[in-house]
Image 1 (cartoon, one colour):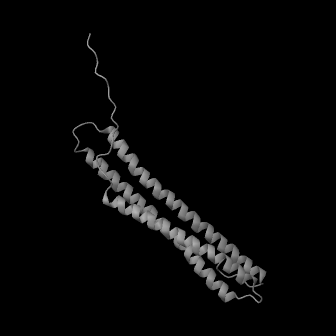
Image 2 (tube, rainbow, N blue to C red):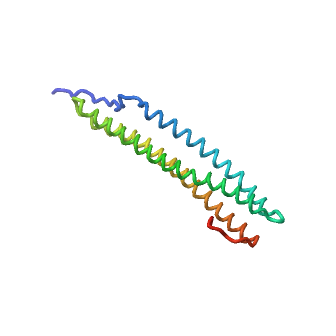
Length: 166
């Protein structure tokens, strides 16, 4: 009787390293994280100052409005960063998938598992970008919510008319 040769298992690895646009996207994500931390720090520092202005006797609506407006602009800018990060995540993912699938046409053997591994890696980059989008958007949303609440409280407690900044 003939013996069967032992079956060996060799994991499938991608034969390509990271591409230049993926490294640039990773650098962009790092910049967004640093920017997010800086904006959060600025907003956290603004809230006690707003509270201190509220407690002044007599109230100073001009100073409160200026600080509130600056803080609101910072919070709203986070939603713009979210949109840009989302679009760049989609772009990097789609270009990576196109490159992976176009590489299949040049292969002479079946590379189904290689394709799946490479696509999984590309979608993990996309998922990281989406996770960062969610964090930036949630931070901006919460900051704007707190600023609106602070605006209402200031104007109602000092019997000032509410303006269109509600």
